[in-house]
Image (tube, rainbow, N blue to C red; front, side, top):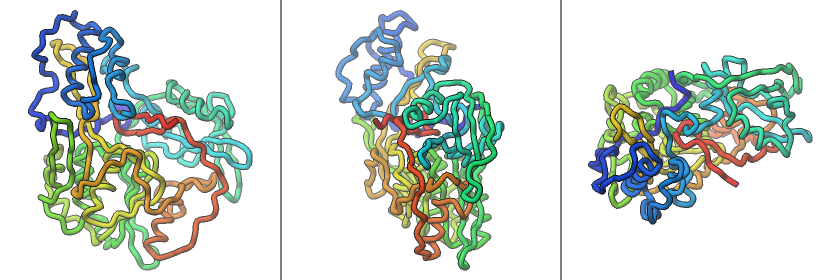
Length: 452
C-alpha cells in the first residue's frame, strides 16, 4: 500500500553523473555519527555536487541546525522545487490534500457568500469512500463557515490535520443548493487510479477523450492497450485531460508522447537535460527516454497504436505540472498542441533521490534537489512561471460543476466546440474564484509553491 501518487518523479539518469549518491567524500569526517553536523556536512557535499544552482551555495554555514532547516538554508532564493525528507520521520514528508485524503478544492464567491468546491475525489480514496464527489459545495470546514477572511487558513489547516469534518451541499442550475449532509474524512491510503477514456461523436467527428491522473511507472503497456481501442474506433481528434496531473515518471510521459506524435522516429530528439558543471548537458531520444524506466514495451509497439490524429488538445490548469508540462512543451516540435484551460504550474526541473546510507542497516535522509532544467528538441523551455494556454478558460463558471469527461464540462466542451468549429461562447461566469496563498503540485515530491 502507498499514499496516493507518492511515486517520485525520478529521472533515471544517475549514470549520467557516473557517480554514486551515497559515495563518501574524500575529506575526513570527524563528526559524531548521526549528529546534525554529521548529516548536514553530507547534505552540503551532495548539494555542491548535484544541485543545479550549486554555485549559489557559498559555505557550509551553521552545521548544528536541524537537517530540515539546514537543507533549506542551502537553497537558492526562489527554488520552490527542492526538498529533503527522512523516511523514518513522517513529519518531514511533504503533505497535501491529495496525498492525505484523496481530493482537493477551490474556493469561490457566489451571490455574496463563500464556498469550497470539490475539484476531484480520487477513486478508492478516503474522500471517495466517504461519499465526496467532484462538484460538492463545501459550506463549513471543521465546524467553521467558509468566509472571505478565513478560506486560506481553512485550506492550510486541512493540509495540516489528520481528520476533516465537512458540511457539503449539491448544486444544480435548476434546483439551486440542496441535499445538505456532513462528511468526516480521516487521512489514509489512496490506491492506483484508473485512466478513463471514451469516444465522443459530435457533428460526425469522432473524438477520443482520455483523463490521466498521474504518470505512474510502467504505464506504457496500458497506453498501448487504450490507444489500440481508440484507434479501432477510428477517432480523428484527441483530447488529453491533464488538468489535475502533477507529473510522475518521465518514461511513461515519453510513452504517451510516442503514441501521440505522428511520423516520428525512435532516434528523434525528445528531451534535453541541462545540469550544472558536473551534470553537463544530456540529450535523449524518444526511445532512450522510454527505455530509461520501461522494459516491457518498446517504441515500435507504441507507434503502431498511433491513432489517425495530427494534433492534440490538452486540458490544463494550475495543477498541471512537471511531466505533464513536459508533454505540452516537448510534443510541440512534432505536432500542434492546443492547450485549453488555465496557466500550468511551472515545474521545468527534474531530480533524482540522493540517499544517505553511510550507516549500515539504517535509513538516512533523502534529498530531492533540482538537478536538471528540461528543454525540448528546439531548446525551448524555461517555463518556471507556467505555460499559458492557447485558449484561456476558467473551468469553474458557476457552482454547478460537471464530472470530468462530461460533454457539459467547461474545458471539454470548449475543446469539442473548437474541434467541430462551433464558435458559440461560454456563458458569462456567475462566480469569482478566490486565489490561494499556496498552489499545489499534487503528484511530485515537491508539493507546495508559495505564491504570495
